[in-house]
Image 1: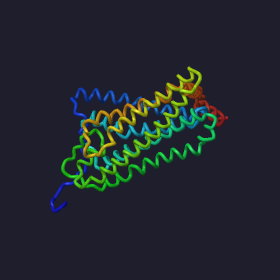
Image 2 (image 1 turned 30 degrees about the vertical axis):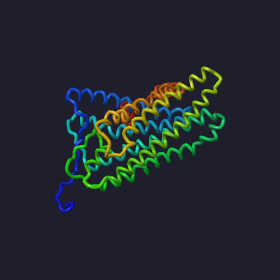
Image 3 (image 1 turned 45 degrees about the vertical axis):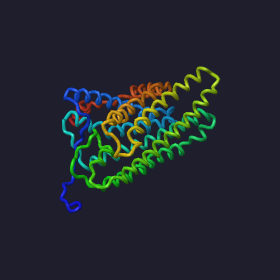
Image 4 (image 1 turned 90 degrees about the vertical axis):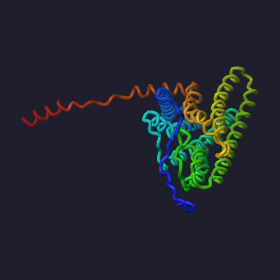
Length: 333
């Protein structure tokens, strides 16, 4: 009963997704499956190699391992459900499942923004202050920064999630997206969503633009230091690495600024579907290749790790039949 009118509360939603013919749905399923598998294998490889090889026990690879874990979790919050919906034809998701998916998506996305800012600071110290790198980037500080990025992600998303969770949903249950994004979800609420929409806009704007500004300042200082390098080869090598990192920053922030930094009610959901797909599929897929697989240090560590696992001793096989026969002879005697 709402304002004296009987209404039916929604208990599940229908994810409209991207309207395609069956043939295109199968094609999209195959493409997303391949991309998802490569993402899992690539990022898991970074984590395993970074933990296994002692030469990679550095702040840089500590941050990269956390980025790889975030990418695996971030894409796994969305893609498996999308794949299931494409292949099964069922597009439903429960109310609580929808809210959980939305919270996990934004928690991990926000944490990744903060982690990218931390990684830009790490590269700034390594290039601009190489002699002081060991004294500044101590293990305790690195761990504290990682914990702060997770705490920042939690604090940024928990308020709007709690407020959204308390909203009643009635009437239409069709979400014009392929996952539970906040903007189309709020359009289906029966209550007043102005406060939640503005809170989402303010938090998204401040965090995304704030971390982007910090990253750009760090990379600006890095580029300034690169220009001063006397060796042309060293300057070209360092700038190549910096340019690839900046590519990730522009893809991540560019797509999220397009999606998130706008009032929810005024957004056009149809125009954000492809951009959201780019954000949760393409970026986690590219990160291992940009940050690690192009790096000679990591490639050498990968070879050492593979060689180490190949040389593991085979387990000894105990021939129980011979032992049993020997025991029988002994008992007979």
